[in-house]
Amino acid sequence: MPRSRPRRRPRGILTGLVALAVGALLLCHGMIPDVGGAASMVETFLPWVGVALIALGVAALVRFSLFAGLAVAAAMAVWWSAFGVALLPSMSAGSPRFTAVSENIRAQNAAAADIARSLAARSPDVVALQELDATNLHAVEGVLDAPYPHHYVVGTVGVWSRYPLTGGSKLDLELGWSRALSVDVDTPGTPTRIYVVHLASVRPLEYTARDRMLDQLTRAVAADDAERLLVLGDFNTASTDRTLAPLQDELTEASNSTVGLGFTWPASFPVARLDHAFVRGLTTVGSTVLDSNGSDHRGIEVGLR
Image (cartoon, rainbow, N blue to C red; front, side, top):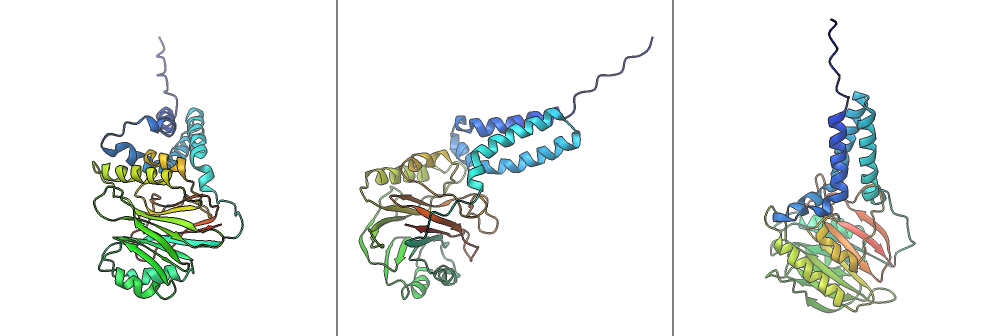
């Protein structure tokens, strides 16, 4: 009696199942319980699952698997719906009335003066800095005080401006030390209220301070009656992190003006956008991530009108 041939398992089943799991993660990441900040970590690096999908697509081609190919295509469609628009450069909305740059220059950084020079060389109207300390503040002032005659510093954050500043105050975000300020800038046409913030860092099991500061910042923004508001700095929160959603309901942030998702950290090989420029009552006509210049964050520049 002839022996029957063993049935061959369909090709690419595992590849397809993994692709479907990735697609499910993209669709349902909001259901991940935020235990110990785990959801925040997952959502911070969520755009990078696109790299995994590319690898799965190659595997599907190698296996000549229709099932795997369709599964990868479906997951890629979900990825594109989430990040495709942000990946493409935003359209210009005209010429800016003023420009602002922001950067975390890193505490105790001996290159602080060089960083300040690189920012000033772009000739922005406003410069916002985070992680100022006794080591680097004097160096920064030596570079910026001449071209920017108006400045205001609170704790570890500061703003330098070509235009007069009024009404400066510390923002109390319940961290325990000064890492946020508010000041009115006499920008062309109508004054702009600027918040410069540096939220607490996030590490495994250490996220509550950041979340508390973000909640207080959102409350402050919601209660602020300023006609034009610019909130910028180091948020230690990625654009894809659910904890940023309440602030995004109050303010808007434009996509990067060049191809890419506008990642800013770490400077050597950015994997997440932790630095932001949110607006209300303003139009962002350009948003750019700057080249690495000696800090562990890359700076951002926005043109506004």
